[in-house]
Image (cartoon, rainbow, N blue to C red):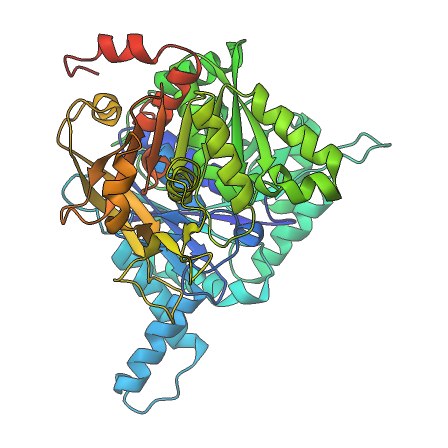
Length: 562
């Protein structure tokens, strides 16, 4: 196995994930099979219980793994299906070592960070890198490893040591280290400063790792004298100093690497030049240039709880982007904090309330994404009601679907006490109830997680036409609460159709409103499987409906061809 390790220095949030993904894209374009591992040095076992405000969205994999959002980048860029073990955390490593210690596997020895924790990290990397993730048989050619955080963080020290040992044991031809760093420009001086990168590389070398490449993040392209200075002080060849400057969209990043011949240098370092082919990135070039040249846009009202941090809904944003590109449009996402739509907001912050409603009314479509807890629920219900009554295209995901059920139960059926037991345990009309297979005491990995099959109840529904499959859809789930099966019959009398159910027929997975141009709610998360060039069917349907193209699209594709 060949390893490409991507580390980061100076500050967090430089784009290590996009850099690692882009390196993978370029190597894949050279005919190599690529897999990815993300190392997160935090003590949490996984990302499942972490706040979106603190860490961005939780990405869900086919096997139900709740992982860091960077794994979503890997899946979208490389078009692979990763497993929960492709995300290594300190919590997972310590848990596995402590379990072995309790079973007596260490035969009475003193269990220490070195060698036991470091050996566990190496064993995990070597075993997971051999798991095929591209649907083919046998291990990949290259494993791209991203080490989260910045060099020098206390919590990442065991991983740095383990990776140093891995470098030593695999040999120089099987290991390539790319260090992502920042080259800032100070306002008044206007000079590209190399000192932060120098210090970062010095820290990394003091820990036993010398980078083969520097991936320098900067606002503008690096000047030649800046490159020479970095080469001289960081002990890295000038040809191996890659510049990842700001670009109009992230699809340009693999092209930047290709244009700097990064693939040739990496392949040379890994002794793979003989087996690789020239990189074919025509599809990426077309996509990047198409997006740059788009002039028309579509306004999408995103009514959510975590709108203060866009990374909280990263996969939803990417899925909207993929769908808009397919329609030759730029997405114009109008972020609306759900609580700003509520009546209480009108009293406390009337200007904010007025602006939120104005934004909602000016949007071509409405999307309510997933979330937990009761904050903002009243505002979401008002948004869903507005979309339903005014025939505005609507997509409700997970919580968004449950909001639709609560709103219709209250507004159409007249059940004023209709609610989810998540928000009111003693609701007079519990239309959304706790999922029996979950746990009330433990939060982590207790939800209905991962890829599940949804059986379509009618081949004539809009969902079946968009998925080009009259029988079923396979999508990923992440939820604890479900539509109460006892109220389904009442709800269907309002014109609501539950067109998708699980294999038991008891779990409502997809709802549609017959009298509406596009009103769809889904219990699953279609955004997780959206890919550039292969947009999620329901996101595509939302954008088509918002631009008046849905009917024509359905007619064109009714023979089942895509």
